[in-house]
Image (tube, rainbow, N blue to C red; front, side, top):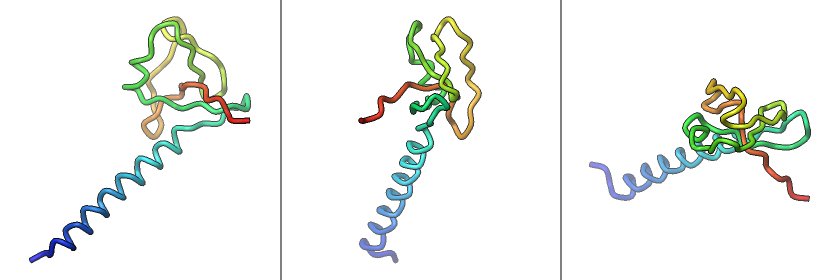
Amino acid sequence: MESSVDSLQKMWNRGWEVCQTNMERDIVSLWKTDKGFQIKLLRPNELKLIPNGSVLFDVFGKPHVVGTDKIDLDTRFGFTAFGIKIQEKK
C-alpha cells in the first residue's frame, strides 16, 4: 500500500511536469522577428478571439489587419505564425 507521503510526492511531481510544460510553451510562444522586436505567438483558439481591425504581426514582423488581411490558422508546435507585438523593456 502506498503511503500518503508517496502519494503527495507523486502528485507534486505531476504538478511540476505540468508547470514545466506550460513554461516551455510560454517560452516557445515568444518569437523574435527579423524587424528586431518580439511577438507573442497566438494559438488558433486565441486568434479567433481577436476583434476585426486589430493589428497582428507575422513571424517576419509584417503587420496584418484582422478581418482584412489573410491570416491562416496553420500551426507549428501549437502556435500560429501571427502574434501580438511585445514592447521590450529599455
